[in-house]
Image 1 (cartoon, rainbow, N blue to C red):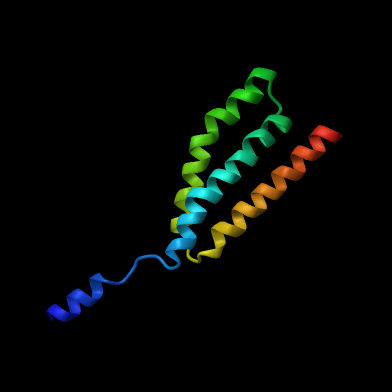
Image 2: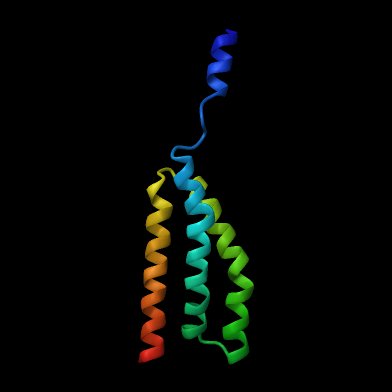
Length: 99
């Protein structure tokens, strides 16, 4: 029974720990860096609120993306979400600035 208990405590809760750590810290930060300037270009607020709201949301977005990277069932889900968010906000920023 003791060997069974020791064996069960050695199992990891998450799969692909390195991928989740990189996605949770680095990719979430990079995604937020793309999201914040993107939101300032297309939010329908006044000039002060267009800048202030994304800056105030930055820590909440980063925390949410970081938590999601650990809570997702598969390790590739957070990567897909953050890459799609970054690309879509990059395109929206480009369209708002050029159009």
